[in-house]
Image (tube, rainbow, N blue to C red):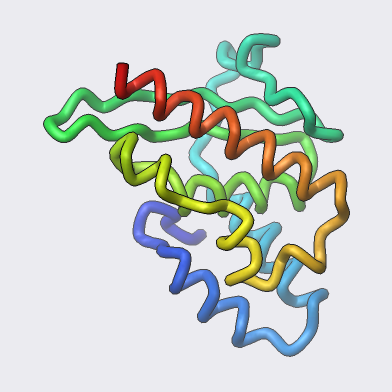
Length: 143
């Protein structure tokens, strides 16, 4: 099981580059999803559901007061590949300050990983919806 807290975008990109075909990359993505921390059953609420995802996705921001203030994200999905994409969101955003979160371009990250042309438009929309909720939480943490 991979420790998502130690992964970086560069590390993910390096690992994705090791695989020759997309079937292996999808398997790795699914394995990443299995590395997500346990999602609390009580948090599976309508308020925590990410709108705009074809699959069910729940996302809960947790603010660590700091200083500096950092955000962590509990994410889960009922679909394996989407769980893997949620794990990528955790790598990109969790444990960062609100300012760092707001500076991340999730579309650029997908390009870095080569995912933008290998996931369906619906899944890309789901990633954008997750990123939007995450960035909204970062803006709220700044207030």
